[in-house]
Structure formats: structure tokens, C-alpha cells
Image (cartoon, rainbow, N blue to C red; front, side, top):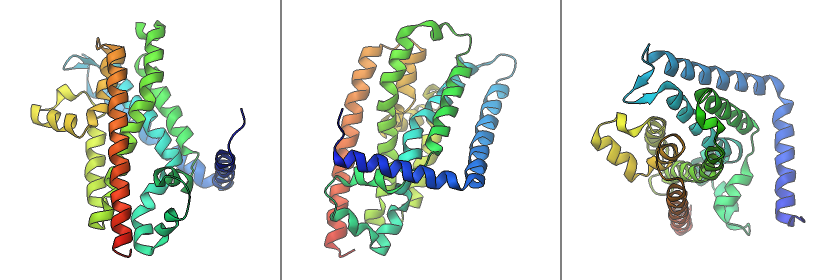
Amino acid sequence: MQLSPFWRAYWRMVGSEARARLEHRADFALMILGVTATSLSTAATMYFMLGASGTVAGWHRGELIFMQGFMFCIFAPQSACYNGMFWLEHWLKTGAFLRFYTRPANPLLLLALERFHPQGFVVLAIGLAYSLFGLWGSPLLSEPLFYLGFVLLLPLSALVLWVINLAAISTCFWIGESDPVFSMSGKLTDMSRYPLDLFPKLATMIFMALPLAGTVWWPCQALLRSANLPLTVLGMAALALICVGLLNGMWQRGMRRYAGAGG
């Protein structure tokens, strides 16, 4: 299949960025070591804190570890391609954001071209290892329908998580400082890796409304429990499309406000 000039240029950029990152081998090795160490400590804490029973509120430790791994997997695309979103506030304040107006592509796509980091592959590998370890010995691993559901739900959940994080960052179009909102949404996102029925009803309602339940909770209901997989896939697809549409509208209004205010 013949790629368009745009995508050929993009993949050349990916290759050059990856080579540039890997030239600093010590930094990259330390980054991998740090991500691996924190991931293993999280898994160990999750594994041992449940004690001899191995369950909490009807959830087995393996299922909880799988949910952690699923979150790693859906964060991997952002970790690889959307590192540039953390520079948005700086670009707005310095005027460097103006280049987004002169390029013939959607700014949300352009944001992926600003930075590429191979750490995303490390995050994905850790997430898959988590998921496999959590379900090791489970009959789910012998069911083809589980793998089909995993492949279908993973990109949809990744889209929802991407929208949540980028919407939080994009608040700097209006309030100037995105860190308070992004830090708050980050804490909530971290909590959404756990079963929502562990939280009080009010907290669960907040997770449903944001919609953080679309990151891990709803997909894992279909993958680990008895929720209907086709309906979950359709619901997640609708949620992802709505979220992307709202995010695109938010960005368009933010860009108009930025241009109207003269930066």
C-alpha cells in the first residue's frame, strides 16, 4: 500500500526521533529502569496487600493486576506520541503555538508530530506483562473471545483516556495554568484503575460522569465479568466518538480565543 507524503514524512520523523532518543543510552536505560521499578512495586503492593484471601469486594488479585496492566496498555500511545501535549502551556505563552495555524492538518494530529518517544513501547510491554501475569492460569486465556474483546476495546479505551488527559491540558487556553486541572484529573485517572464498586456511590457517579469509567471499568466488565461484549464495544465506540468530537470542539474554540486575544 502506497503511503501519502504526509505519512511518509511522519514515519521518517518517528525514526529520527527514536534514533535521537536511543543515542542517549544511559538516559533511556535509567528511564526504563525507573518505569520498571515503579511498575513492579505497584504490582507487588497490589499482590500482597490483599493477604491470604486474595480478594476484595469480590475482586481477585489477578483481576486487579490485570486492570493495572490494561491502564498501562491504553496509556502507551500517549507515552509514545503525545509527549508534546505537556508543552502546550509553554507554547501558548511563548507564541510558539502559532505554527499550528500555518500547517495544513488538524492541530490534534499535529500535536502527535511534535514529540515521539520510544518509551511508549516499554509502557506497552509492561502493560501486557501485567495483564498476562494477572490472568495467569485463568480460563479466560484459553477463550478466543477474550482476545477479540481485548483487541477491540483497547484502542477505544486509549482514545477515551487520551481525550481526558488532553482536555485537562487544554484548559490552559482559558485559565493559563493547566497544572491544577491536569494534576486533579491525573489523580482521578489513577483511581480509575480500580473497580468502581470499591468506592462510595458519590465517587462512582463522578467517575461515570467524567467519563473515567470508560478507561478501565467498562472494558474490564466485558473482559473479566459477564457484561455483554458486543454492547460494550458499541457503547465504547460511541463514547470515544463523542469524546473526540467534544475535544476537537474544545480545541477549535481555544485556538479562536488564543488568536482573538493576540496570544
